[in-house]
Amino acid sequence: VRPADLPASLARTLAGDGAPVLVIHPDIPQGRGEEDSPLAERPKALKALADMLAGGGARVVSSKDVAEAELRGGSVLALGGFEENVATKRYHLALRQALGVDVERAGSFRAGDRRWRDAGQALLASIAHPDRPGATLTFFVPNGAAAIAEGRKMFYYGWDQWAALDGG
Figure (tube, rainbow, N blue to C red):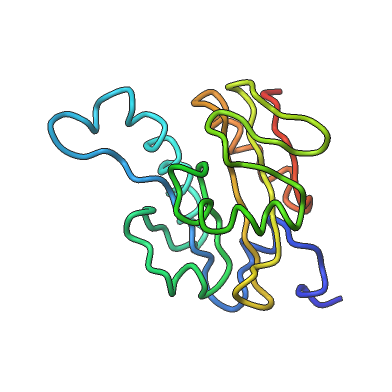
């Protein structure tokens, strides 16, 4: 079985399609003490998760610094929700079309037959990359800061197309 014949998954995204996976994290507020404010905790935690993946050869870039060509250039892991990650915002309709998953509302997502609203819940979802045959897009969308710790558990669901991580 060729990897391209397997369903989209985190494992396929991390394997890449001949190039290192691009991991995009939210921007960390800068200036006038913002990087130490409570608003910076979430992006900092997601950046720490991205940095952990960089140890495995992934290329890490912030949402504000990613180029359009990079989004279309290969497999992507987007960390963060609709309003904080350019990749999640750009490809949310493709995610909805492929899996019926909705990530447009801050602090919740719809997957399966319900809306997940708890701050300790996170979505892990993967689809075929609509702009690059053979590549995949994976999204990790935590509802709240408590869910970011669930990011380390995403590897247990590496072959699933989507999983709702529920704090346990």
